[in-house]
Image (cartoon, rainbow, N blue to C red; front, top):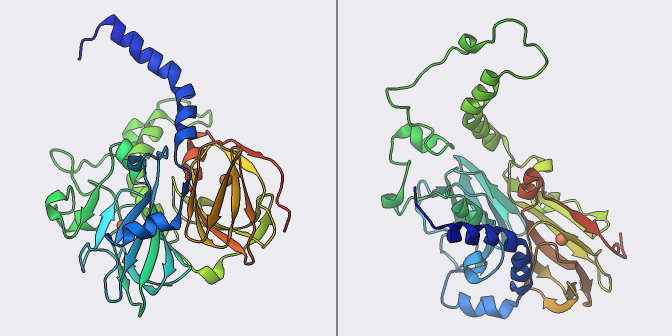
Length: 358
Ligand SMILES: [Fe+2]
Ligand SMILES: [Fe+2]
């Protein structure tokens, strides 16, 4: 144990006390508007550009957002032709332009512009560009969350020297459980659960301690099944825009729609010409990419002018409302960490003025 002076303990304690107030300041200072030109200028030198990432000064803690660009004939990911790669982060990809297919956990999925792909955690996947035009896609992943909690693993076909589990045989290659093929020291232990059945009457309707513990022992295997049973693809034509107090919205990747995500959620929002969305604020992170249209947003009393290709990063619990001043319907690609914040119980959403359209 590290021995520290009393003053150090007091200093650490004060950091906890100050954190909430200082976080408000960090939210206020975090960049909000990233113009399309800033991204385009960087795309001249790189095939992918990180748009939103805590390492770039954004006060966004759980997910990042970036653009990938491939010229004609280039493959989508430089991560090999057989396995591709896998990672212990959630990933949602939006195809902006072009078409092709992905092989995810051995299954082939065809996609085209407007579709979403939700890659199950730790499933091998590779993407292939079949477009006769430049391919553009956007990805949101929970890398920052996994890195902060120390569980981030990226096993890339092209970088086997950084593999942690994939080199440990056939089973380790197939499982969606990191370390799932590793036997405990001394080999696999098969436990007969009946040995831990409580004696006498304890039938008060609650699980026994042994049952709770066995649920823990079986969790990863059950989670692997849930990952494999979750939906992967959202076809653009299947999106259903419906009225909400915030305006016309179509949820794409969501726990409530059969996707096995725990952190990330993705939706599309539309604002007709001359109309305004609802106003609200919420305790979760939100990144908006403007797919089409032009207008402005009021975010915590500041006005931000936006157009197609721009990105808006809404600080946690900042009021926001969007106004379409252009001639076409504005369309937003919206990523949030709502599922994560629901499971930790911190969600709090307040609705202000509702949208002026259905
Ligand atoms: Fe990936
Ligand atoms: Fe929002």
